[in-house]
Length: 420
Figure 1 (tube, rainbow, N blue to C red):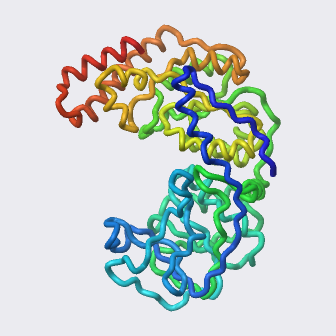
Figure 2: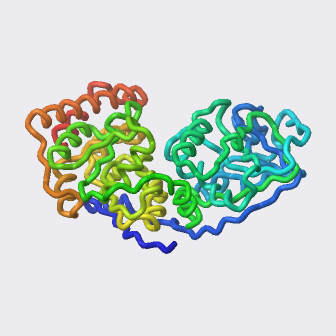
Figure 3: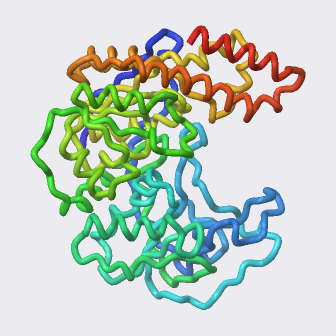
């Protein structure tokens, strides 16, 4: 599967454009995953359930180990390249304060399915990254997986996901969570076909296409689809005034969805219906692995550009085009001129963008058909929400800034709001 998607980085200003550059650095590395067979394998459950390491307090062994106690690198979840594309997981068993028991072998032959986390985006990416190998193994082999806890959200979510995707004759009893040390005489460990922020193998997209083959392909619609994050109450990258953006887009004929309110298959149905997809960078867009050929436009504010590499890597192979737009952020732009720069170091700082600039750029790029307008009431709401957002940031971080009075912080906050 060749790379076909056109990727563009759009900054409203030269500063914003420069900030996006790391999104294209060191990514899209070709991956050719293979399977490793481990004799007398030992699976150790997640770190929190075992004593900490002598050399790394708070860390413990988690993952797959061979008969000599060496960590099986192929069993790791990989993050890179800024992290050296190193496996996210195992520690040497010799570092454990207390000896780890080696139980009797519980299975003669099994397949390792990876580490399942309860996060939607990581489930779609890393949770399915080893499924490329399943068609090549016996259909009755157990699939052993690491999860965060018994009945963990990650394990239950994968079961629900597979049930909705309905691969042919998949026996859900094959999925077995590892919550205690487990031995297998012969463990088949498929390398992950996707590395976060680094690369993806065509096998991953092919596996997702197989898993999603039972989902319907509705008649295509050229109506733009906006995937909102406005309903996420714990969103660390919330856009101040996104509800007002939703309302203006809806009046301009854009379909607005809050994916967290819908069943998974309804979100995928929407992505398969609409050929133009808009919204803030977020996990919901990863559903396009089941809906190739979309035109995508992201709001790339409030996120470390290095984290965009996964989106870039997937969209190059799976989308027609993807544009990452970074607008001027009124909060961030003022940090060099005010004492609020310390607040901007917090990942929870407000994201304050100009909706008019957003609408204009999307309309000029053909992602929406007209330029929406906020009505006077929505503009008043937006102003009030910006003030509240700055006050919350001050309340959260102000006491951590030494030598600066809260009165001075309030004065500087007003400067941001006046210039924003």
